[in-house]
Amino acid sequence: MTQVYLPRTLTELWTYLDGEPEALIYTGGTDLLVKMPAENANTAPALICLERLGELRCIRETADSILIGSTTTHAELLRHPLILAQLPVLAQALQTLGSPLIRNMGTIGGNICTASPAGDTLPPLYILEAEVELHSRKAVRILPIREFISGPGKTQLQKGEILSGVAVKKPADYNIHHFEKVGQRKSMACAVASMAALLRLSPSGLIEAARLALGSVGPTVVTATAIDESLIGKKLSLTSLAATAERIRQLVAPIDDVRASADYRRTVSGNLLLRLLDARTQ
Amino acid sequence: MTIHFILNGEKTTLNVTPDRRAVDVLREDCGRTGTKEGCGAGECGACTILVDGESRLSCLMLAAQLEGRKITTIEGMAVRDSLHPLQNAFIRHGAVQCGFCTPGMILAATSLMNHNPHPTRADIRAGLSGNLCRCTGYQKIVDAVEAAVRLEEEKS
Ligand SMILES: Cc1cc2nc3c(=O)[nH]c(=O)nc-3n(C[C@H](O)[C@H](O)[C@H](O)COP(=O)(O)OP(=O)(O)OC[C@H]3O[C@@H](n4cnc5c(N)ncnc54)[C@H](O)[C@@H]3O)c2cc1C
Ligand code: FES
Ligand code: FES
Image (tube, rainbow over all chains, first blue to last red; front, top):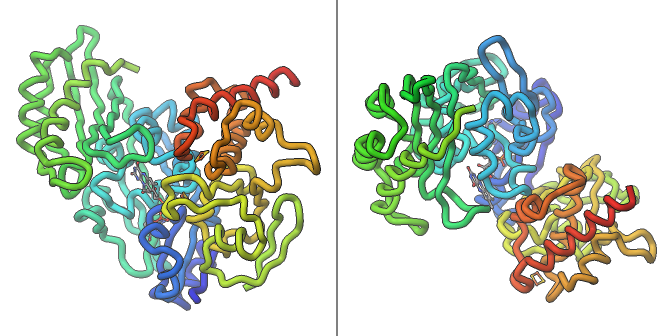
């Protein structure tokens, strides 16, 4: 039998972690409990579930950033006016994540810590220049998300540390928010390839600023300054995007798996850029 | 460990191993076998229950997480002999064939209606997209939920 602790405050959490330093942590359980069905749960020394940690269940804004507590569920984010109004690119990604049931349970902290190449919140968080906040009994440290996630399923999280929140810059300079995911079906499908984009389009229709991030086509989220810069000064038209689409196909490093071949993923990654033609200014 | 929770309106106290799955506790210890297990991995929605009025997957919850919650299973939907309007609508619209998905569908629809009392057909489809049905082809399920929504709208 494995003990399951449900701390309500950080102070309680640290006490449980002191007593059970090898405990596994989970929040919604939609990744951890799937990987570790109950029959094997008793091989874990202890489980600590963060679902009742109210301190971390929050969405707040400052003048230039938005802070999301790690135990906030995807459904809560999708109902929050700040997220809908200021972070449409994240909201669009959340709408494709799992199913209503998975979104009622799964959390942004869990999605980040799972660090799956297909994690749907990750491409938006990369282009929103997200920084994660890591808390231990003794210290708090802040890392850019691209440093925190070091490989597929790998993060810089240390023993005794939890992810307490993620802060993103308000993307005030961008008037196009766009996310698209290609999967095998609409609901409950892991991304075969996905793309998040923030663009600033001038009144005359020229791209003045661009940030792109691609999911599921490399060991971690793929971004490239050269790709972003190649869009500057261009119009949103098929001919002007075609060259950048080709560069994306060369840049990405997808794998073959049960869901799709590397070749298909490569083609789709370029095509996802062309879908920006349908994107609308906010 | 001893856990206390409200199951379908009744105060419930159980002695359980904390790491058992909620679906097993509800079925085996509480005898509420209306809650089904299909996949055990979050993919099918057959194990859907309401936790404080919101839909959750009981195959991805541990017994300890029931503590202090208000849990509703399909057995808690009818009030004595009168079925819940969603249950009546499922019967009337032929939305039940083998019935394995039905408890989950009805609880997911309840959760949807709690958050959005006036869902469109598209909202209903999206709201039930985490619940799989191998028999009906979904059309009749969406018809049934839509009928229950309209009935509620007429009442209010
Ligand atoms: C049927 C199904 C469909 C899914 N579809 C998608 C999808 O479309 N897109 C997608 O991106 N994901 C999908 N997922 C994966 C999963 O739902 C998400 O990654 C979700 O956000 C995980 O959150 P959680 O709170 O449930 O994580 P948990 O399972 O609780 O935890 C996941 C990992 O993160 C760690 N962790 C969690 N919270 C913290 C914290 N605060 N601090 C430190 N470590 C922490 C845990 O130790 C564990 O290693 C799906 C899962 C299922 C079962
Ligand atoms: S049994 Fe829980 S989702 Fe399938
Ligand atoms: S009625 Fe048989 S699975 Fe839906």
